[in-house]
Length: 336
Image (cartoon, rainbow, N blue to C red; front, side):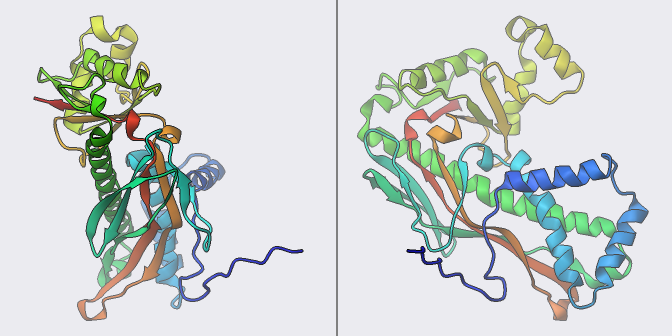
């Protein structure tokens, strides 16, 4: 007997689906390969903008859609969320449920209700995740389009990326903090100061040192997890540059002097964000052992022109969720 098809909402903007950010990366890489790695000149960008705007009926929509791929690429590599939680593209109509990975049956779900961020502790073997919307509202002055100022499109693209990234990463930080704090209520060994395997430790000095990281991962090692993802503020990121050669070795220092960015030290993969509070560092395990970032529909675009203000604009939004399914691998380091 054939399986009944899942009903789909069809209409203006309602046929949107989820698309993994890695797919956007692959598409953009194919385009770059076709261009031989060359970037468009200013004149070529102007010509492309003029060509799109020549479509008087759909030009603005096409212009907005052209921004989505580059924004998703930047969210993948500049934001921290998609490198900490598993990105899971959803099927409409199917319940959003995940197995709780912690032996104590603890999961922590984030959801937004009219702008309020809440964390829901959950006990059991499966958790049903609630979704929330993240949105940005970029706009361009009408006259800038007539002047074919291609850089204004790049500005709108960057504005959107920053707005979406701030919302995503700030929600992730909130979720990590609450998951770590609530886990101590069910496992007293994770209590800072008195527990044998604390999930928060205080750094004595003003500079983060390798010994601080090794102390932290010792606790998660004993929980049979490897917490190798390191998330920090740019201030703590600069601590890596202060380490002595005796600590890092010549190869590490040579790469720094050569201008290479520090993305890894030993077993630790390093991510930075201004959203992370200064003086705070988070250690998390591989995304498979931490949680999920479910996506009902990926970042999409609709026109949102403000005629009375002589602005052309868009609404760019995504419908997503966040859940920590296993809080045992989270360790927070704080400078005193």
